[in-house]
Image (cartoon, rainbow, N blue to C red):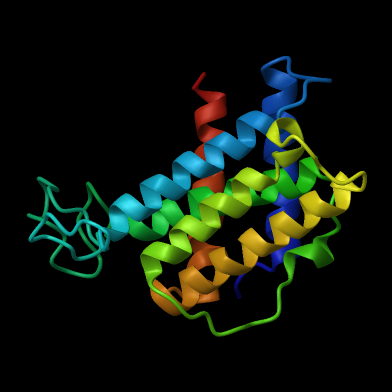
Length: 201
């Protein structure tokens, strides 16, 4: 049975707490770093999607490790001992999810705010990536806009939820991921992130 969003949120809180404690980051405002990290991961997700690369003949999404030495590009669905059938596109997607959940924690949002009604998205996928990056950047809008409403916490929440809605739709409707795939990949990457902390990453 797949994890729920609440369970993933709790797992992220535990990972964040560990990182903050072990790196001595208590009391620091990490939101600017986390927003930038999410924007970088969205760029990496777009890079694995490849659909915006009009200059390339290779515009197919990277759903298999292309240059795996063990199985010559993961032609089987299980892959090999080296790559394990890794899906780079899905891995980048769940890297983004880690940072979305971390931002939700930093904004002190309840788990209910992670649920967004399903909606069919329209427009080109490239434009959706741009909209996603814009909404994520606007979470920090109070830091760089000349005029920002006094209720900037409400605006932050709105931009966060707007970004999350595009992100969910992008994953399910454009990249073809099921919630179960996302949840399983999140759990696996969360475990890797804990291992990295244990090994002094």
